[in-house]
Image (cartoon, rainbow, N blue to C red; front, side, top):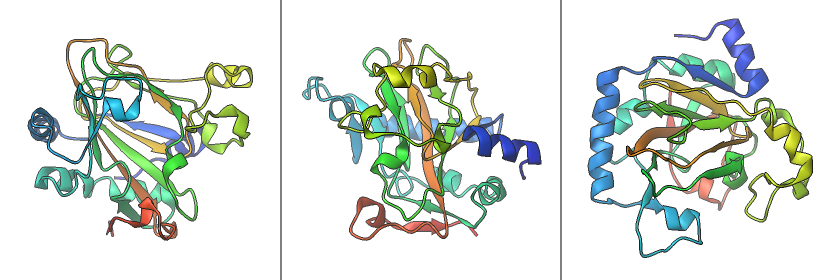
Amino acid sequence: MELTKEELELFKTQGYLVLRNFADSKECDAICDIAKAHLKHKIPPIETESEYNDILDASVVTVRRLRQVYHRDRVFKEWMENKKIRPILKQILGESPLITLAHHNSIMTKMPQSSTQTSWHQDIRYWSFSNDQLLSVWLALDEEHDQNGVLEFIPKSHRMNYSPNQFDQKEYFLSDYAPNYNLIKTKQSTTLEKGDVVLFHCKLLHRANKNSTEQAKISFVYTVKSASSKALENTRSSSYPEIHLD
């Protein structure tokens, strides 16, 4: 499967693209069932809500993400090595894609009532590579919408230059800083259904609301990079293996 010229240009222009009904429903259910078991037992490594938001009570353990899922279960590994998506990744990157296990490689959650919102940010802020030829592959395992924390994007923000004043000390894009207002007003989001995949550039500004429903929102995200994008030595980005998708 490959993108049309129009789809490829849309990704390049806006920084993200939705592939509707890309993954099989049974595959999504298998991934979700295993993820729920790991979440129930809080199988490490995990990230908690209190790690993400330091004003929360650290004694209350709410899982925000399951980390390093590639080696957790064969079903996770098979999705990340999905052959149908490889030609698309190669089109976007212009080179053979590699999975970097250092970043994302996660089951992401928004737990009902106990999750927090995700602030505006660029993923590359905590990645260390020689160029920005990286993108994330997000799989919706069920419906994602405004009430349970669907992704929101600021289109074209991956092509913009910013000043340090536009970000806080943790490198989150400031929503209460006047020069950012007009850009944030251009945000876009779309309801995702089970099996939908979102591809987005590592420099694209994105965020998500908290989950205000009674059901957990569970998603799968991993990161791929071009072969020419090298992890910088002695950084987290170079501390995990990479998987070639030839």
